Image (cartoon, rainbow, N blue to C red):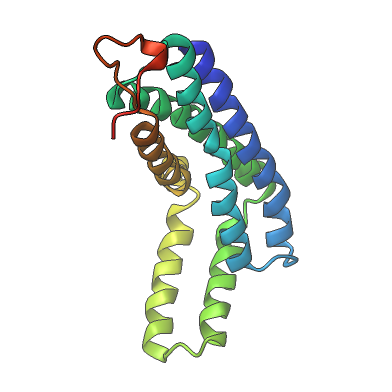
Length: 185
């Protein structure tokens, strides 16, 4: 299982890291809108976490002789997710601390400008400015930064893990060999 988890996790994490390394500079230089970047980013995460589905299916078919419980499928999927998340977070930490130490300032400025352009009220702007000031103060802290970055990607991997485990679970049917067992709904 270790080889499968590492292989699928590295594939998903490598894809996430490559897309991040490509998109972040475009977004920070203003070539790509923040909203479009977020949509692209989460779409990339869903595509990357297809490695969870294929990893669980591979484990079921090769190691489980065509059968797997929801719990075992979840275990395989969540381990793949955690490997991918570790790569994603590590990539962001390298980019942030080495190339974008002013990210929090730029992000805050872009977010506030977007609110102003949308016609936010003075009270909404004051509240948002306070929140952005807190964000800028906390974001350089590596533990806060790691936690925020992990929480960007982990929920997508968790959902893909749950969906994959539900779809791919298959119990052996008594009297029928494991490889020919029917899927249990």
